[in-house]
Amino acid sequence: MNKITDRLYNGIVKENPTFVQMLGMCPTLAVTTTAINGLGMGLATTVILTLSNLMISLLRKVIPDKVRIPAYIVVIASFVTMVQFIMQAYTAELYKSLGLFIPLIVVNCIILGRAESYASKNSVVSSIFDGIGMGLGFTLGLTLIGIVREFFGSGSVFGLDLVALIQENKVPGLNAIVSSEAFSTITIFKLAPSAFFVLAFLIAFLNHRNIKKAKAEGKEPELCKLADCASCQNTMCQGKVKGE
Image 1 (cartoon, one colour):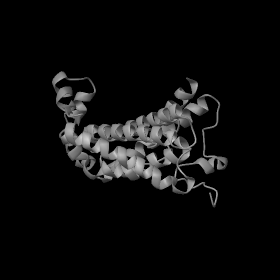
Image 2 (spheres, one colour; image 1 turned 135 degrees about the vertical axis):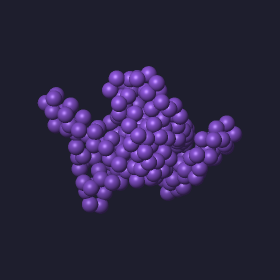
Image 3 (cartoon, one colour; image 1 turned 120 degrees about the vertical axis):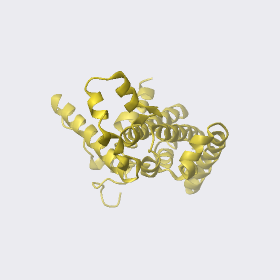
Image 4 (tube, one colour; image 1 turned 30 degrees about the vertical axis):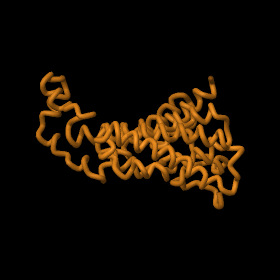
């Protein structure tokens, strides 16, 4: 049970793919124009990540080492095709909104990275929960970015017009802010550049919170250690040992 909890905590908080490892940036920046798009993309990736981890863990002793990457891609592509057909049949509007980014899950570095670094080396149960944890962490990241962009871009969240709701109920403190005409005209949040801004501010906020918490507990903030480079999946890291 402790290992399962650790896998979930690791994916959602400690090694969050979006806010910590900075993986899967293409869908993170492209599809998060609304919260529902972020949630839908995140859940689709979670399902594929969990199923691919399961299958690769089952076949880890069967797949020859020389062809493991092509084999992983075939497994992942099979599950992506299944999820794509299901979404096309039952959530056509969401499928249309996400467009090309659904089939592009095949080459999402989060899924291939977990297959190579974890599922191919660990038990089935542990790999399943690793997939769930990483997937939920990715979903959380996309959904948070989508909420911020949708709220400031159109005044709504998950399609619910929060600005109108606040104005109708005259929520203290918020009513004066959202009543301003300027609030509803922040159109940059609907455009691609806003994804970079929102992601940067969220990461800065989380880093500030972690550093403050570590100092309050009398600990040093967790920093990248060179000894971890061999298993590091963060391709953006500037502290990697040369040759690793």
